[in-house]
Amino acid sequence: MLVAQLVPALPEPRLVLVDGGLDRAKPPHPRQRPAEGAQRRVRAGTEVSQPPAERLPGDRALHQIGLECLALAAVARRLRLRHALPHDRLPLLPFHAASVPVVSEIEGQVRVEELDAEREARRQLALAQIRQYPDPVLRMEAKPVEEFDDDLRRLAERMSALMVEARGVGLAATQVGILRRLFVFSPEEDEVATLVNPVIVWRSDEVEVDDEGCLSLQGVLAPVERAVSVRIEGKDETGKDVSYDLEEFAARAVQHEVDHLDGVLMIDRTTPEARREALATLRPRVVIG
Image 1 (cartoon, rainbow, N blue to C red):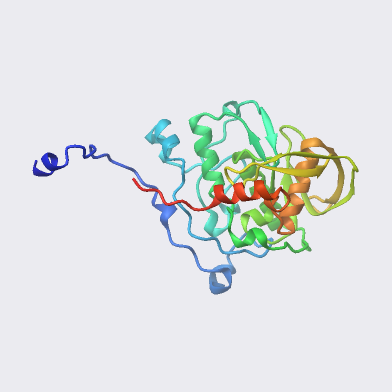
Image 2: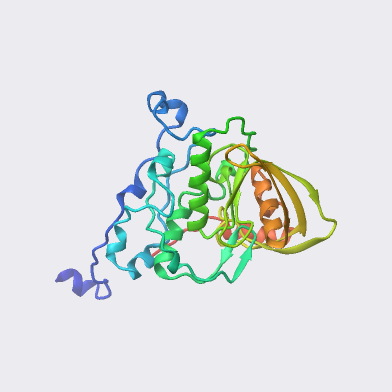
């Protein structure tokens, strides 16, 4: 009673449910856990230790869709926990095709669309498994894939599911901490393809400047000049030779992904002014209150 009289504006206490899994400590690097390494099922490439997960910004969306959605035990689409790396095992809500709105626009690596609260919460959970700037792995050059085995196929499947849930049109292996030259992308609506050891063998002379977004640089759009048309060759997850002749957004997406495999980000290809604005957006902020 005395406290209430002294501080009349004190807000009413609220019960908050916290997912303790988000606050668990960073696991040791794979080289420091030889016993576990023998049992690890995903070994398609070099695993780079991930920094401790930050609190997800989707609390408001989770509150809107009800406390029952905090029981996030199901996994999105074809993703299974056995496919995830040990430090990436964050649960995702079930995938319902009927809940996906029509895509309104694509910017670089990201679909721009209106999402309901449930889909936004699932998107945030997927983004939590994708490395975010300034994670140093985003600046590392990926190594060629030499073995086309079950581990590689599981990695491609996992990346495809993460890309879909995060509302992206492309995702490179370096963005999930794997230093191998492969990425997944959407050459057409409702289609996901895998390209291993990709090489752009032809670019059109015609170029276009357009805004790009990136799943690893949330909240940033930057103008980037890209070739309008490209031909890209590589292999699929089974080792079969594949090639694509792409134009417009699909051509931009694969150029964006190949950059990721070389440790190059879209902010490296934009104007100095846009780069300054992007870095200001990405700079950590101190929030009081």
